[in-house]
Length: 422
Ligand SMILES: [Zn+2]
Image (cartoon, rainbow, N blue to C red; front, side, top):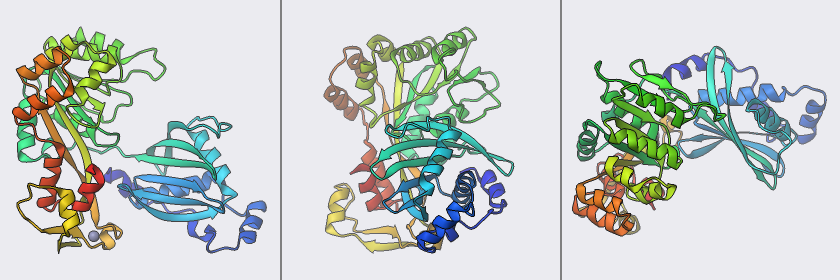
């Protein structure tokens, strides 16, 4: 969370009390009357107030859900929802229109999902939001994600890597060149890890570049390039000219196509440390996915040094942490390798954690270090089973192992383990 911004935003007073318009407080007719006579705040003011409240309360998402009788607005906290207010149904369409207009979406398109981003100014703080719309039978459901840019780069030691994984990671990024991929599902903190890694490589004698759109963090020690959204200046264009400027380290945003992938791999092969992120559901599975994109097995085999895969789990709230006896079902879900431990921890739920029992999140990881045998297998485009076998023989540990460690160390709960890994 961007602490600085939140502190500033907390000082901005609300223009009105949202709850007074809740359908549970007012009779429907009365609200309708206010709506007609213009006594309700404008949709624009409503939208701003909802966003302000969400930021002040530390939410990460805002959900506008039309039901049969109302527009339910809920705030999302690290994946858990809490009701903010239920506004009269009449407000749903106006609010949707205002939000869509802000992001330049097509207001008349209500039958297809749309997505975009927009910036609003609250007080003197600029806030970036991502919007997505989903046509539902009761009306358009809109989700906003508050994009908070941290004011500083998190240190790699603070990302939740276990000692073994941190050691593996260090081995990977300390190489003079190669392609290091940071993978994970959407919203798993990949970019944060990528930046923390680049930050580790920062020394005055190095040429460091980043290529991504949008730029997630401003670095004073790197040259940052933002390809344009309209394809007139692409990631590939940027990479080509960076390669003529003797780069030592390049951070490339998401690899999504063969051309970017090949050029990235080529750069890594000819002496640059390239760190890139990619959507993926596990480390080993990333390799067949890249080959499927059309990336040359030769380039990939020659350049890939490792894949750090991650997911986020909620941490137990320290204020209400309690020990309890886990039931046989839970122990079974957790699986073997817990050495007969039956006492585990969970959060009871308190004011500090909004009754959820969790506070903040940490990463669980698996790190695949590519060795010569795996390199040959990539080159031969061998089936995943073969890659897996080679990986486990070389000491690869799955994300489950790391997650289990974080349960036994009482950082997270068995329930959270099951929720994120099944
Ligand atoms: Zn708590």
